[in-house]
Image (cartoon, rainbow, N blue to C red):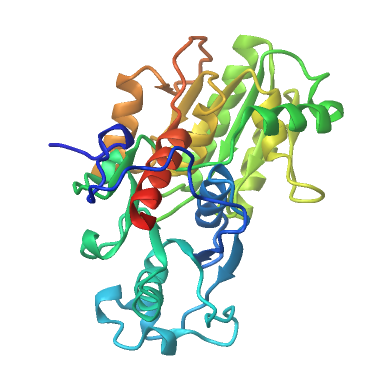
Length: 342
C-alpha cells in the first residue's frame, strides 16, 4: 500500500515552487476543535511548526448532531449551541481542524470560502479529496495523494520547550532518586477499560519497578483518569519515592517529560505515547487493559521499530532514533500550501 509522505509530494501545476515558503505570521489561521486538550494540542503544535499565530475556535454541538456522522449534517452551523465560539466571516486563510464533530463544519466553511486552505488532522471519515491536506497516523491506513502519514499523533514537544520545563520544574523533580520514572496515566475509553483490577495490577507493577531500579516515580494523571483509580494508585504507592500531581497548581506534564530518565505510559493514549517518544528516552507501554485493531497496529509498529517496549514491571534502558513527525507534517503542508497559492 502506497502512502503519501512529504518527500513524495509533487505540485499539480507546472508553475515553479517559490524559493521561500509563502506562509507568513500574518497568514490568518483558525484552529477548530471541540475543546478536548488532546485534539487542540495537535492543531496548536502544527500551527506553531508552520510559524502561524492561530485563533482558537472551540465548538459545542447540540443533539442530535452530536450523535450523527458528519455525512448527515445537512445544516452544520445549526448544530452549534450557545457555548460555541462564533464561526463567521472574515474566514481564515488556513483552517486546521480535528475531531469528528468538526468535519462537517470545516467543510461548510470551505464551501463559503473556497480560498480557505483546509487541513484535517486524523481520519475525517469523509471523502479525502474534500480536504487540501489530511494528516493521519499510519495505523489509520489512509491512502491518497493529499494524505500525510505520521507514526503517531502531532505534538508540541520540542527541545526548547523541554529545556525550559527542566529549569521550571527543577525543584519538584531534580532531587528524586534516579532513575526517575515518568508515569503518564490515561483511563478508560471506547477500546480500553481501566478497571479496578487493572489499576491495582498497574500500581503494583510500578511499585515493583521502583524497588528493582532503586529509583522514583513522577506521576501525572489525565482528564480520563477516574478519581477512584487515582486514589488506588496513590494508596498503593504511598511507601515508594514519588511525586504525584494532584491537579492543583500548574500542570507539570512537560516538567515530567524533561526530567524523567524513562517512561511508563498507559496504552490508551496515542498522544501520550507519541509525546514520550519525542523525548528519545525509553518508553514502556502498559496496554494490558484493552485495545483494538488500530491501537494494536500502532503499538506493534513502535515495538517493531524499537521505540517502545511493553511494561512488565521492569525498567529497561535502550536507545533509538527519534521520530520527527512534526517536521514531516509541517514540510508537507508547506509544499501543499505553496502549490495551492501558485
